[in-house]
Image (cartoon, rainbow, N blue to C red; front, side, top):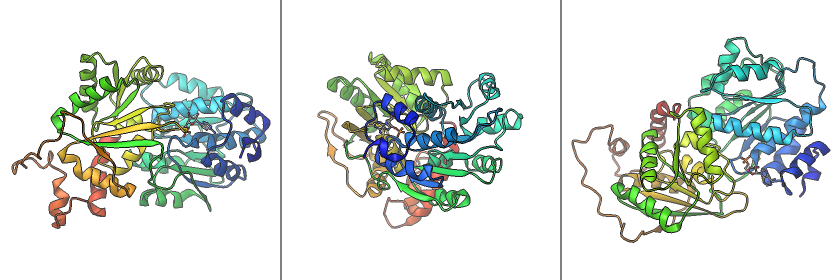
Length: 426
Ligand code: AMP
């Protein structure tokens, strides 16, 4: 199939051609015609599937064909969980609207609001926003949402994970009731389905990849290692393999900073991105990583969410995520657009239950390997006096009383809630 058969205007086809795209991705093939028909969409799509063009291209077409009023009210609102994703979407919207009379801008927190307010005052057709700053500017009377015709919730699962449900509901209440709604999510939890049922009207279900599967082009490998040796191992992997572009995931901001310092001490250029970094530092780190000045980007899940780094060859899970879906998101950063990628996970004894949860979600066991000289030693004896906080994984086991480390549904969601309190700031 070619882009020509999707019903897009010449201006959009020209912009797509300028990007070098020749064939629409599966999500684009399915999504574009449905959105053009004005239908609501519930789409299951991860980053890397081309979903942004999947909603942006038809959205731009609809807006450019409808009459514009002189004041240029906001006619389309794209909500995203993170600043990086918001900035990336704006970049795409600008590229695709090169040959259209469409104005777009982005607003997110963590930076001075004045330039954003100024852009809004000039009139904006497409606004990309994170929920907090959007509500903030609305409360200050600096923007209106009563003329929005198309709403997009991108990475809705992540927005809920970050605790944005209430903000989303408040934003929905500010929009006109007659509008088109598009919801994109990598996973479909009960909460997402509930949210979708609350505001989508007879949505068309669009799926890019089967739920909870990982990209086929990603070569996944698990190394069972000792926790204390992880830093030495990752440095060995990077140096021996002469890896030039590696995205490394840690579970905490503190862990990201520490690992970054260790890399720098070994003369490996590195930067960390997480919620405690200023927007300027995050943007600079990402730009350096993309253009090759920085070899290793160490990130927490939230900060890395939705990052579009074309042809990223290596992803390393320095620590496994405790939410199995995050594994799918993390390794989705590599093996994109037909390129091969390598995703390596360093798994210490206490992370074995996380691995089991991931394999259960993927419905496959992941291949394991051994790094010579770094074979895993026996599991350390469990300290009966260890604090609950440091030993939280044991709790569900005790609760279940069945000797099975896999969490049941209830303990899983409890765990999720516990984690959510940290997530918003990651
Ligand atoms: P996304 O999933 O929207 O983050 O897109 C992932 C990457 O795929 C981005 O770098 C896009 O520029 C690129 N892309 C989107 N659509 C296509 C296409 N039809 N052909 C090739 N690359 C594409």
